[in-house]
Image (cartoon, rainbow, N blue to C red; front, side, top):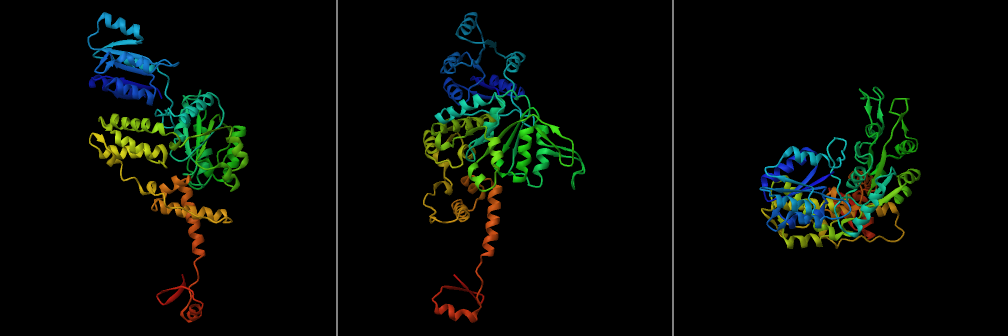
Length: 469
């Protein structure tokens, strides 16, 4: 999505520009100083800057030095009472245009409409695909995205929950030749196994009970665009065979139809699980993995990009300030708390922290508003000791139960820490519950109790019935 930076102490002009950007489907941020503008440029590089000619801490056109690189930024300067000399100086310093206040909105819109077209998602709304970060890990990721995006290669995104895999997929789509076509995300773990085939491939009227009309699946609706298969490992194995055939031939059939349909989509798949382990467990077909793993990209966890925490926190706070018309700030001590936090939930958790602190604060976010750190983040004493020789099934069960205890029974947090979908966690717990039920020791009647006592066994008495402890 094209991005607009508005730098002006005049709130009337700033809000007019912001509204014009919104109407053109562009993202925008309003700031009132050169210092704030420089921070915003480091957070998200704008495509166009509207700046007052003079601000309290410097000249607006000095931002050209901050943002200079191979990709030119359109710089529009605004003056309340322009003089000939001021306009000439502005042009000489690199301004693309000079506007006089009150602003000529048709002229503003002409500039906005010449910016690169924004990518859209399934709903037709502009996407917000912008990756923030200056860490080495993010620079490497951005470089790889820039190389693969213009191609039609299938991409496999691997990373922990909350690292922004869908955002990376949106960015790849936005930088591709398909950016004017739909971007359709599918969470393969959130759709019922009974419905997922119909959702992906579509169905004909009367093909099954309840199919009262023809339904076009995701492959038809995304034709010409990008299909994002999130949590692809959670897809039923029998459906993986059909998906593989579509990826290899570009041909599929709706349920209940014998007519072949062609599709032209780019596939981006993602998972927060280890594909090799899923293959060993029989949850992912090896041939499908090879078909998806054309260009793998690993999304770094927030713990590997500590220097981006401040940038991201400021960005999330700026979004909230822009939405609600406020000017709340983060204190230095609060920023120190954020930098030292572990962030097992990655960028998603950081965003939630900032939103909570924003709601609780008046003007400045102080450290106490970031407390208490949830218990599941602070606790480090809970460990799990597993003897060598324990079966993988038992290890899996023990780890899930221990993580549930660590998270205080909050399943969503446990799923995030385990790196699995919430649906998978529910399935595992249900499976283990059935297993535990089958393993309940038999109750022992009172007349058998003396023999047990002689053996020195520990017993529990409940309602006249004795059972081993």
